[in-house]
Image (tube, rainbow over all chains, first blue to last red; front, side, top):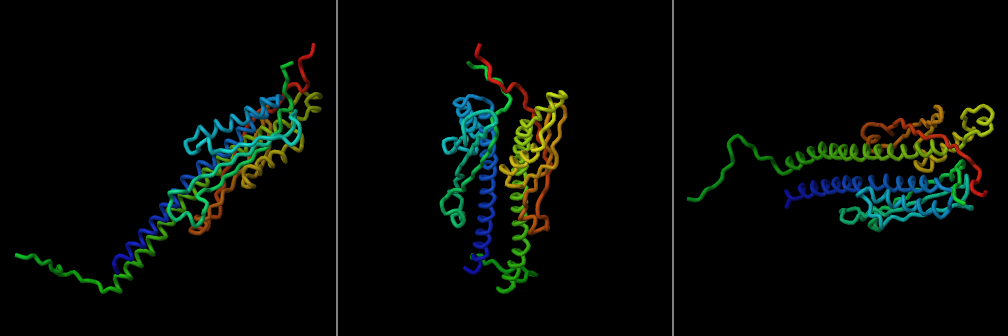
Amino acid sequence: MEELAPLLMVLVILVLVFTMVAFVARVQPVKVLVVSAARNCARNGVETLAEGRGMDQALKTAVETAADGAAIDPAGLEVRAYTETRWGRGRVLTCETAYNVSTSGLPLLDWFYPRDHVPLRAKVSLSIEPYKSRWEK
Amino acid sequence: MLYRPQARRGWRRLPGDERGQSFTAQMLVILPLLLLLFGLVYDLGNVAAGVSIAQNAADLAAQEAGKMVDVGHYMAYQEIRLRPEAASVAQSIADDLTGGAFVVDGLYLDGALVLVEGRVAVRTPFLETFMGRRNITRPVVGIAEAAYGIEQEGGGD
């Protein structure tokens, strides 16, 4: 029993180090994807002067960006696009994205994340194209 | 015939308390090394992610600054120039995405291209503990084309 104690200690430390590495490897790629989704959402949304089309392409682009990376399940991505005032030239479109990274299956992480997930959020606000011709009648 | 293993000559069996000391000494060497290894993985991964996010921020900042064309100056001289508030707009976009980690150092025009130059400082808590290095700073450049076009509605007749 006396000789088992050091082994157990080493095992616990190794599990802790493994958990930390696995945690970082799981969270970091998702963080970049959540930010990219918000960026592309806003960037594509502001390219049109048509409100319906702008919102549509903003939301679609966010989900497509998230789906490009294997780290995210697009079904779990929350996307919100809105303008404070009416849609129009120079008005601000805001895109917010949110995703909860699951930490289940990683030992000892319950101490830090009792809800079994790490919440990630991103927000980007851009102004709708000020100089753009409207071609539709 | 029963085989009985015997202690090898010349080998000395350590007493229990000395074995404990040997283990403690090994752990004192191995544990910081393991932590350093993890710290490098964590901090460098964080830096890579931070630079990637800052690149997004720089591109967006350039795009947004590119919408601040000084129209009066353009009409008079046929030369693209940005309005003075373009720099603060670029910085506010960068702040939104990076929480202040990305600082815009300069906003330049190269023809119709808008260049945002800056640097992102990513915190490195483990490297700070082991080597006293508080953060890693990387330069980031964002490029976009200045927005231009017609701001009047078409259609009609």
